[in-house]
Image (cartoon, rainbow, N blue to C red; front, side):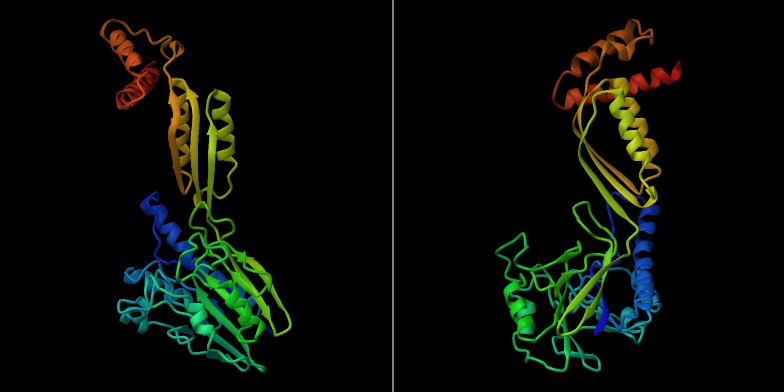
Length: 376
């Protein structure tokens, strides 16, 4: 029985356009922290080695600081680590893995998988890596690596690959898609005994052998990831395999695709939901707002967003389907007269327009109501 740790898609150096500078740094640090946590898990679980299945770095153009911090974190991993170049960081002429920044500071227990020749990890254990040499290969690299292999009797083989398996690929015409049939045949022929995959950020079993898995990304990176923030501890021998997920990630991306906003109660309900979120500093929220609000209620909603945006990692709002309609009650008690009163009426009339003039009028009325309310 061999135990190892399966992870991938670290994408160190990743940025997000909706992060402020301080939040971006916190997001980056969490990804380096995840490496150290993986090292602690490997030690606690007595793993013999770790495989990182592609996209270790966000690109080959990342800054030196990111490389230095990555290698410093890898120093704390107490077992051999095998890094696979993927589509984000392919092993081409500009590869980060061939830079002096990387080579001069790489710890001796960290290995880059540079070709498809089986690597002896320990007595009776081999890794067959499938590195990417370009961002868009034109064939199934995994099949290319596996097909020529001989069946083995006294050796366990772990194939480390990156890319989408054809059975779950959103692009059925992708020439680089990994053939599930070819992988399962190789397993049945004892050419390989486990296919460790990267590229899909959600923890996913593929096929029915129990020997083909995506470990997912150790930190969530987007809203559509079903189960990211994990790694896999794998117990492997010829007769059976056991995988156990371990939680690594600290960040969450939460999306609500429809939030009805029509009344004060709707605003209060949203406020309670936002306030109940744990670890807000490492949570990103996206909301699609629909409905109709008065100016006063819209102003209250905006104040809520201003407040919660200062606490959350990030807040994205989609308001294209939220209509703001001025009501008489919005202007009650303000005592507008003369020029101010005529301006309000003109803006209210323009606010009925569905086009850009209507949007500008509604924005102007919202600001007017806000300023008038604060002046009282």
